[in-house]
Image (cartoon, rainbow, N blue to C red; front, side):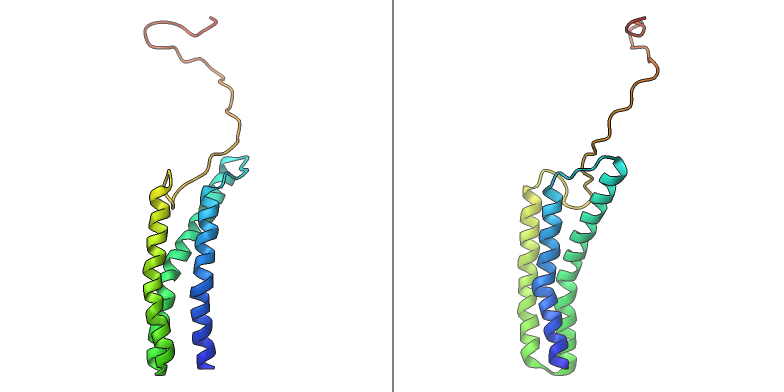
Length: 135
C-alpha cells in the first residue's frame, strides 16, 4: 500500500502538473469567444487557477513525496522524488521561458470581450471652446 501511495503521488507530479500547465498555457494564448466582460473575466480566472495550481503542485508534490518516502524508509522512492526536484526546476525554467516569450503576463490576464460599445447618449464639449459636433 505504501508503494502504491508513493507511486500515485509520483505519477500525479509526472503527468498531472504538466497537464495543468499545458492546458493553462494553451488557454492563455487562445482567443476565446467571450461575449461579455463577465465571461472574459471568468475565462481569465479559470486560466489563472490552472496555472497557479500547476506551479504550486510542481513544488509541493515532490517535496511531499520526499518527506513521505523518508518517513516510510523507502530509499527507492526517495531517489525518485529527489530526481523529481531536478525536474521541478526544469519545469519552472520552461514556464519562465514561455512567460518571457508572451506578450502579456501569464497570470492576471483577462482576454478581450466582444461586448458592443454602448452608444454615446450625450455630448461632451471638446476643449478649445468648440461645441458638440452636429449642433
